[in-house]
Image (cartoon, rainbow, N blue to C red; front, side):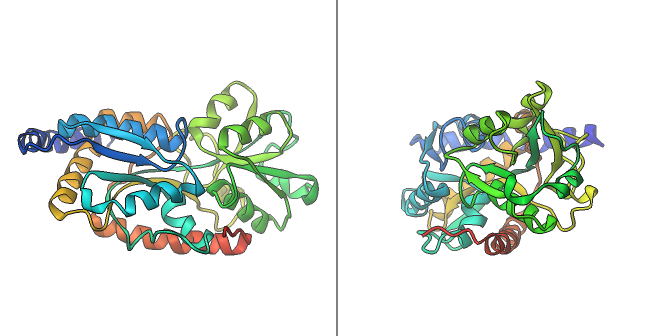
Amino acid sequence: MKRRAVLASAAVAAMLLPQAGAWAQAGDSRPIKLVVPFAAGTSTDIVGRVLGEALARQLSQPVIVDNRPGAGGAIGSELVARSGADGHTVLLGTVGTHAINASLYKRLSYQPQRDFVPLGFVGATPTLLVVPAAAPWKTVADMRQASGKSVSFASAGNGTSGHLAGELLNLRLGKDFVHVPYRDGAQALTEVMAGNVQFMFYHPAAVLPQVRAGKLRALGASSARRSMAAPDVPTLAEQGIAEFDLVAWFMLYAPADMPTAQRDRLREATQAVLAQPAVRDKLAAQGIEPMAMTAAEMAAFGTAEIAKWGEAVRRSGAQVD
């Protein structure tokens, strides 16, 4: 089945590749700006650079990755939402920018579904619940015995997927583990490895090297099914934690008012790139699992994710002015 899927992807890519030459002949040599609304070196940035390099080859046109971090991705997202007329600016959106922020921010400067049109669903990744290697817990069930206020969990900031996953775990376990936000995921992970904070939910690509090095222990995956990157780590649902299915995801967006011809051109190029085995392999190395979606499916997915994460935000009490 895997071999057939790879061959099918290669066939789709082969059919679409000739279009790159046609696009190049159209005489459009202006660079495409791919805005990554998070800092360099983050998971989103790594994904953005994989896509940027592949799109540049596909379009025979420069693609510049432009990091615009801040406000949970809202700064970069607003920039793209207001750039539609230039026809050359796209956004690598995430579960944060296009699902969580809709409920987290009282006055969000953009509307995820009104101001953007999806070009391609890049993929999704569960987060892994990790604890220091010296922690007494071997399974999530062991955490039920912990005293709530004596346990803290780290995240990359208030309202991030890691924060909300921790709050959902609180709810499911009937605990009041204390949230400790950090300025970024790398700092939070360092504090967990040092034992200064007791656990966190974070991306497989970041935590698995530390698990293999014996510095962390992975207790569970946040998704309904096991992570392809860590198939030996059981899901929280498998361990008796009901209704726990949270994944981080990435989607490439154009501003809603981008000229139709340019938007269609970029959508075709994006779909071609996402079908390429080399691109899929690079994304898989980051723990990102592909999921083919039509335009209608991407829109429906966005609506469902806003509702799901909105409930998580409300239950957590997280709010940003």
